[in-house]
Length: 99
Image 1 (cartoon, rainbow, N blue to C red):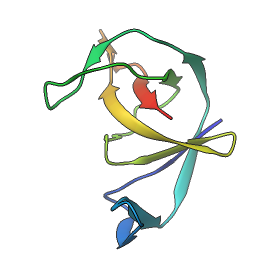
Image 2: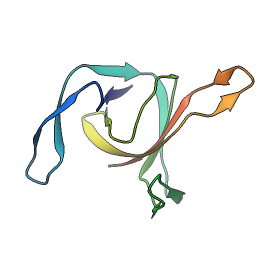
Image 3: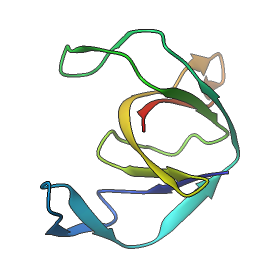
Image 4: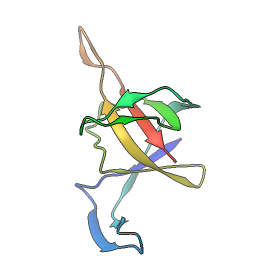
């Protein structure tokens, strides 16, 4: 299970010691598949990065790179969000993560 706390739904209530936002709000749990990866990807800012994990989530909810992602007690930074489509619309959500 993957737990996402939305940045737009949650307010960055304070900054941690390294400037990372602290979230308050409701988290949502999604079913999905996660695997470790070492393939390169391009993020929205045009950077070439190597994520540590890739997740496929059974949701069509609008997720963003600013959201907080947690699995098995570890928090991951969302590097990239894709929502592949087919003839019926958005099928699932893919996340590229670094943890």
